[in-house]
Length: 381
Ligand SMILES: Cc1cc2nc3c(=O)[nH]c(=O)nc-3n(C[C@H](O)[C@H](O)[C@H](O)COP(=O)(O)OP(=O)(O)OC[C@H]3O[C@@H](n4cnc5c(N)ncnc54)[C@H](O)[C@@H]3O)c2cc1C
View 1 (tube, helix red, strand yellow):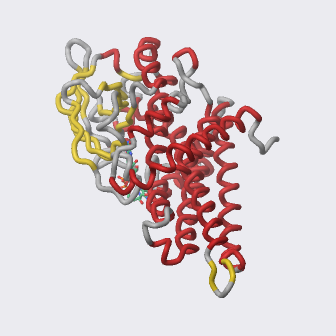
View 2: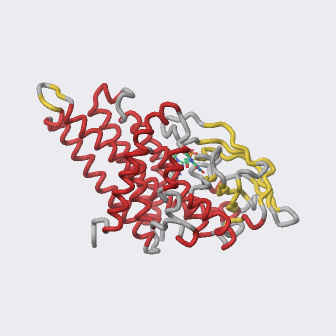
View 3: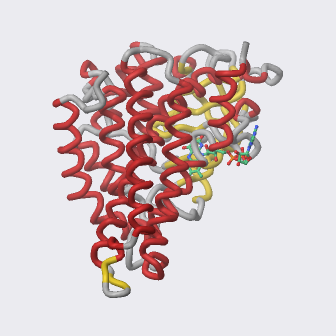
């Protein structure tokens, strides 16, 4: 048993940290303030090979594995969670989908473009009536005589759905099939009928566009079915196991940013003739932040390592996401507290961390859903 990253991962971590702190962190506040899409930051991530982390070298990827991807995502999210969300979806839900379920032809067509960053991928599962209960989605896919499908309906909450070049879209192919009546499709966003709609005005992650998607008589060729017809729900859920490691990594990154900001401020700010760092109550918060971050990081790496070893990791991914996201929210609350009134202003980054942390308990399965997944894994016969 080894609790340290190996040398290769340490080098990767150092490089990712230098890039993220040098290029992403200085742009994060401005993107948040202006609600400006982090396109340039995502392009820079592509130049670092961070858009091909799940892709094998055969298709031009950097093939970092799940541990390597987590290492990078922690650093990117510590600097800019809006960029982190974008590259997490692209890597964990789109590239991973193609690597796992794509045909040779689909891999040849899409992976080189996605891995290089020429193309960006989105993931369209959620709808107005189906969030946690994803299997109840109603977007329709009707098969035509030539084997192609026509997609109709509305998707909601789609991260960078307006900037993506290709999207993994889930639609119902069997109206009475429940979870077994959903199919995954690879949809090029330039095709007629793919129409991004309203952009959500969000509490946080304001540099990441979250949009509604209209699928209006959108024709998808038969060769763009991902996996088997009516097996899409299984694909969606299995991808979320990987996605949850990504969001847990994001939460660790945000929590680390909260800790760093809190340590810095506690050393600088003086009250009662002493730095805040001299007070036991503040020291206790710092200790609890740091201890929880280490615990969360270990849970993330355990889930990631299991994935890299090809072992089941659904429960461990949910545990990592549950713990890391709750702790990130607690750290963000305490970071604001340590900053006092200053923490409530935009002069310090902790109010942004507070807003950005919130969503880690909501997307890719809420806290309640993670508990359901974990409990079921113990309670089922
Ligand atoms: C910023 C952002 C980006 C997103 N990006 C994407 C994306 O790229 N692609 C995509 O497909 N989706 C995306 N989503 C959607 C996201 O995955 C959903 O918001 C999430 O799954 C929750 O669904 P919901 O919002 O419909 O909440 P609901 O499912 O309506 O849940 C509301 C509340 O009820 C609780 N609840 C629901 N069911 C149960 C239950 N059985 N037991 C106990 N409690 C329950 C939930 O935990 C929650 O607290 C994004 C969301 C956000 C906010």
